[in-house]
Image 1 (cartoon, one colour):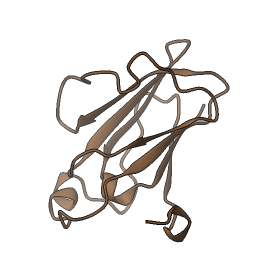
Image 2 (cartoon, helix red, strand yellow):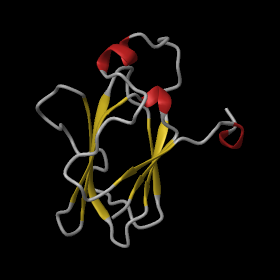
Image 3 (cartoon, one colour):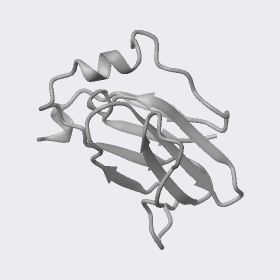
Image 4 (cartoon, one colour):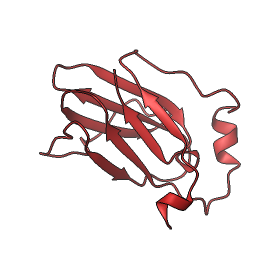
Amino acid sequence: MNRLARSLAVITLTALPVLGVVPGTTGPAAAQGRVASCNTAFAVANALPKPVWRLHLRRTGNASWGADLLGSGILMPGEVVALRPGHGLHDLLAVDRDGGRHVLMAKDPCALTLVRIQA
């Protein structure tokens, strides 16, 4: 699918402990009712002036963040990584070079195209 043809929904991760659910969403019930054929792919862009050393994605409700999606790599300022989680609500955690935690909670990947990590 041509990325330019898609409408751009931008969500921003900040240094706040947790960002709330975007107005207009109604939580897990909304994601469960989505058509299972939606495109769950979205991009995560590092808009910080420092590298992101760890990136984690989990299904909302799971206690563990699981493995670091960057593995042995890092996400330098200006770099973008593509993710394609399963259906349902997910939480995203980015940890920067200084240990700052940038968290986005309970988001439906079907509604995302780009997430920016920024202060």
